[in-house]
Length: 199
Image 1 (tube, rainbow, N blue to C red):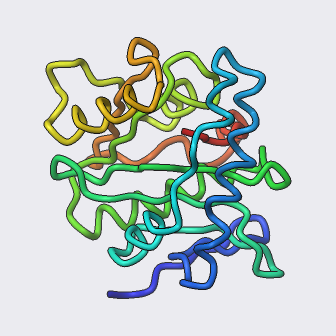
Image 2 (image 1 turned 90 degrees about the vertical axis):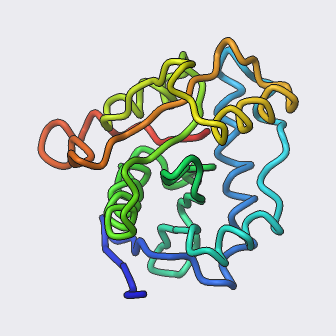
Image 3 (image 1 turned 180 degrees about the horizontal axis):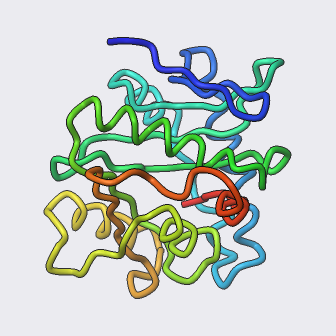
């Protein structure tokens, strides 16, 4: 499997290294604090991905990071196969590195990797009415799926979210077909993508 790596505004984006995995839950926790200023402040205190879960994503090549020149994890995403597509289980940017487009840059790298692996689409679940959730992903080209479009894998994930305490009426599943590029990528439109994702 060839190494995929790119550079963006002084950050290096690539697959996570084993020694970097321990930083991912902390970045997730810090990023989640922005929910304190949303309709869902309780989400700031929800459990993060466990280190065991992060290791499992990593074993299957599904852990990606943006690191600083000093080697610190500034952003990450973890993903796995669900319903024949690539499901983004978590995507977060450290608050100290927010609003620089790191989330979108990581998504573009993940999109490239997913295409090379033959996946037809990217999937995720998120809040429908939080600016850095569904509206952000819609600007990237994702669309909200209707209930009848959900496969068994997504339905199981939704059930797990409900059990965790997330309001199902405010959560949506989204899909980005990989027959068209993730957009926008550059120019004035890129400025609209300065919000950073947090599931």
